[in-house]
Length: 76
Image (cartoon, rainbow, N blue to C red; front, side, top):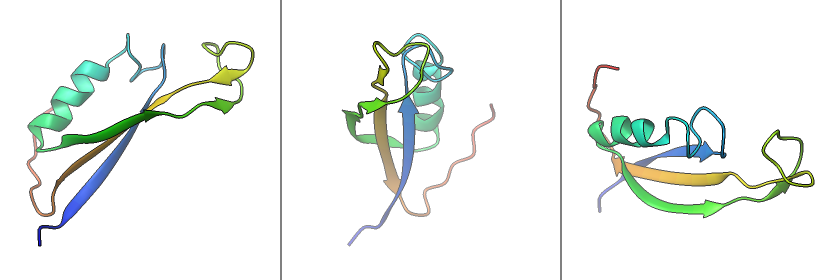
């Protein structure tokens, strides 16, 4: 049975790792380290955000996985 380790990335529109931020670059960096996208989902919550409409923010949560012990260091 193969074992995995997981990474969680929360991306909110307008944030540093948001859709118009560095999300593509971050995913490419993680992909070069052996991570692959397992699933993603929206996580609406009440709160303060400069990008929230009526106080409801909806960040996208990305769950990535890679085989345990598959660490590859890539320069930033």
